[in-house]
Length: 145
Image 1 (cartoon, rainbow, N blue to C red):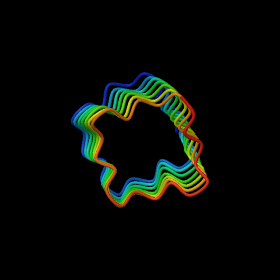
Image 2 (image 1 turned 90 degrees about the vertical axis):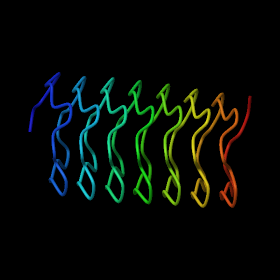
Image 3 (image 1 turned 45 degrees about the horizontal axis):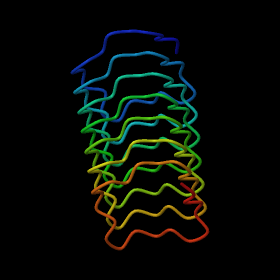
Image 4 (image 1 turned 180 degrees about the horizontal axis):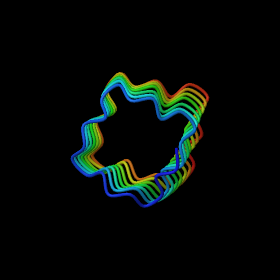
């Protein structure tokens, strides 16, 4: 389960079990990971731009500094995920569960967050410019700066 800096861009990993895998710096741009289990995985500085992660489980995953621009995370489970300094520009997070997620200084500009659950999430310093926040749940979320 060590795929550090592997080039898997465009790979079809739908439904894969990558629980607690070390995927630090991996290139998964354009990859299909629908329904995959990435819970607890280390994806530090990974490139997941334009990846398809709908219905994936990323709970407790570590994605600090990851590039998720244009990624489809619709209805994904992102409970307690670490997305510090992550790039989520134009990402689709509609219906995603981001309870207790750490999005400190994350770039969510143009992201689709409608119907997402950000209860108890930390969005300190996050960029939400032109993000779709329709029916987004922010109960007890930290939204400073």
